[in-house]
Amino acid sequence: MTQAQTGASLRLIKKYPNRRLYDTRTSTYITLADVKQLVLANEEFQVVDAKSGEDLTRSILLQIILEEESGGMPMFSSNMLSQIIRFYGHAMQGIMGSYLEKNIQAFMEIQQRMAEQSKGLYGSQFGPEAWAQFMNVQTPMLQNMMNNYIDQSKNLFVQMQDQMQDQTRAMFSTFPFTPGGTQGPGRK
Image 1: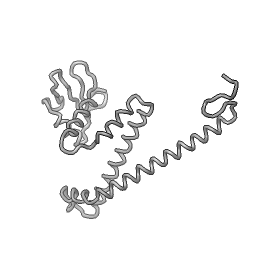
Image 2 (image 1 turned 90 degrees about the vertical axis):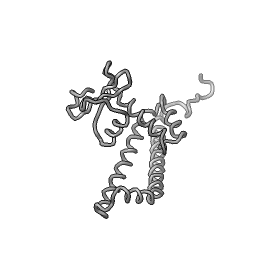
Image 3 (image 1 turned 120 degrees about the horizontal axis):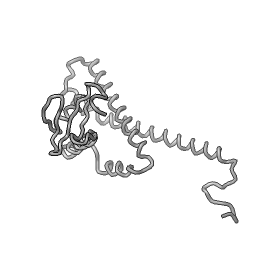
Image 4 (image 1 turned 30 degrees about the vertical axis):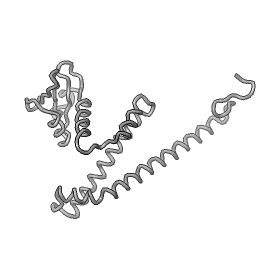
């Protein structure tokens, strides 16, 4: 994907062999911190290798995450990162990525809705400091709500899996083989 393909709204950043990032819109060199600010500002951008044109956007975003995780309060526990790594190469890898993306989107929508509701209740009096205090008080409730959401999702998935298994058994019950892949006596 190039800037010409997506229109003028896409900001093109070139990464040079010396590891420097060049913002073609501002004609200046930028840092990972500047790229992070683009993300926070919801600015659409693409990072490409200046020589080969290879898309490096994901790599740069992962570097930003690594820096954030190395700093003060990491978001991901070692256990969670280990579990994510185990999904690479697994049959469920594609589903896991989609699942995480949809859950993060749902979480963002919940966060946005809470912010809108607080503005409706408190107007412009509810500044960043008040919002931070509000969230500190609400964090246990939100964690409980998210845990309930995950439990419900898990239970729904298990129910769906059981239904699929029952339907599969019913569908294959007319075939002359035994469950579990074992063959009857005397058969090879």
